[in-house]
Length: 80
Image (cartoon, rainbow, N blue to C red; front, side):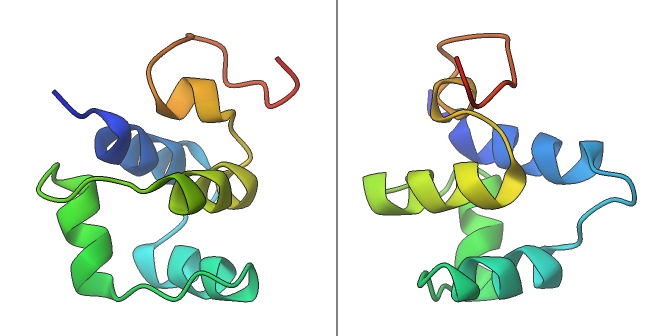
């Protein structure tokens, strides 16, 4: 099962204050990744996979490691 979308939703919710989808989309756009709210919803609900270039942008914007987004580690630290 692809859990990356769920991890993206969790990472947004863990931010203080919580990062809304629109804010995430704006930050992704600054990183050169232009996706719609509809696509983000599909990603977060596991209905669309996350591509490698998107994964890197999500990691950077959300401040979590790619490995955490992939479910390969419990550590959120980007430096691991």
